[in-house]
Length: 519
Picture 1 (cartoon, rainbow, N blue to C red):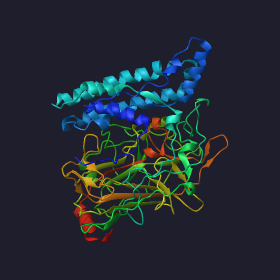
Picture 2: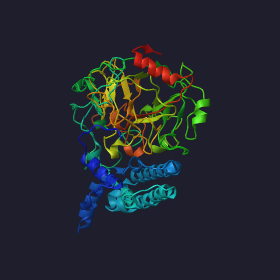
Picture 3: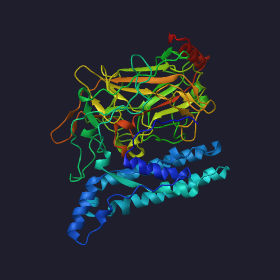
Picture 4: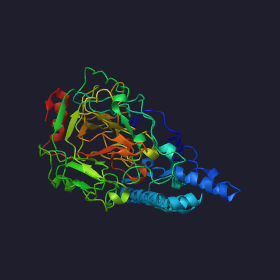
């Protein structure tokens, strides 16, 4: 199997989640420790109240092991049932986070409230759901380490210190943004950010920043002019390089085609994403789409043979606007608030490999790039890239949103996995059938085949946010996300389903292989 992830240093919280996840794969490890046990230790009611208040002030969000990413061998016959149960796990976390956010006073009065009233009951619900996943898999002859799977039921809370970023930029080594018309940037490096005004353990536990009370905070922004260059050189082209490109023009979703479903991760589940997506290309994508319905749908692309679905979470500016989804699930009910911004431009381009020719993408190939849950999963699968026009070739940010100078616009870029296992159009965890090429050589590993690399560049005109004296952010903007992920920049992600007709997939590959620039 190809390597999906470049090694990077991971936060301690990430390592603990990974340790529990490793149990599913037969490894050993410990569950992430429960938060702030010392808050329960007191012989004095006064001391106990003080510690309870301090503990509640630190509680920012709920962290649960991502069960879906550990299920790499789910039999095809069980996948629909498992997908529904995984969506139930997401819903349970969302509901628990809402309870966490609405009971701050109770938390301040009782050091055990979070554990007894929120985290404990959540574990019980998750345990029952996870057991149904086990049953679904075993019922069709699949195997699963039931004991290890059980270990993923326990959740913890994460404090304010854990949720602030350290000013790191770049992100995935070979998932960089577009540079001079396409290709890969190698991220990495460390940025210098201004001191943050984020919440501390002694601050009142009112919310976690933002119009919806769940981010972003001041620490999530950085003046891009103060960030050191962090974009590395692209791999050298070999004699077999495929140097062409194919651009498909599909618009910016000016017709406001939105929903909060995710047919890749949660087929058949309404509001499976818990946040709102922009859709371009295929115009009939929702939780209940099928391959046949995608083939029969209209497209926003100029090339009507391109029926592919390109969708990504919307960006909102938190200016107090009450959007159409202010009172809806996936919108205001789940902390995704403010004015939805339409990109000024959306460039979708397929590029080649520096190491080899490419093969055509298979029909109905599904790829997700990035991770919507990096706050609790860690950065292993992060592929968010934020920058500003005029800075893209020098600075790419993963863990902070850029504050752009006058006359410069915010840019989101994505470079999708460009290696395919040659067999599967999807996988149980939606990752292992595709992989990133080696960042130094551009070579696909372990029998994977190079495919045209999908790259996207979205440009937004946004009034630069400003950090106020009290630590709040005026004109904050953020990507939509799961409510407990606190709108962190690193949670940005992009989704794609390849659907073509009239032999377009082969034409794209031929164009890329021949060194032409087509559209």
